[in-house]
Length: 112
Image (cartoon, rainbow, N blue to C red):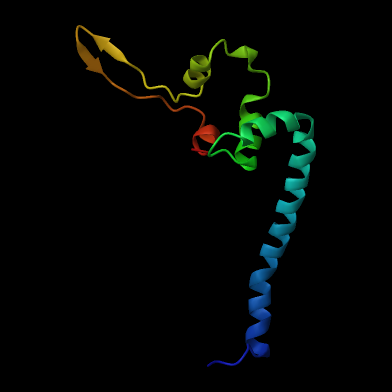
């Protein structure tokens, strides 16, 4: 079994780990800011969190991308179409043409 790092090895190892400590602090600060910004929408977050497969982080992302005012989408199908999750059914003269959904919203697609 190898002994602990000696002085010559410890300093470069500490230097390599140092940027990650700063990143962890940055991430913690951003998490705090997100919590402050999402606080007025706690009811919407809790409702989304009840959906199977949607956690708190996904609920935050959904609210960030879509907002909480769903009146801009007359039906659920309009929302799905806007997000480009609805396959296009292009049929002409009995022939099926392309089933692409389009590019869509990459932030919403990343949650699935």
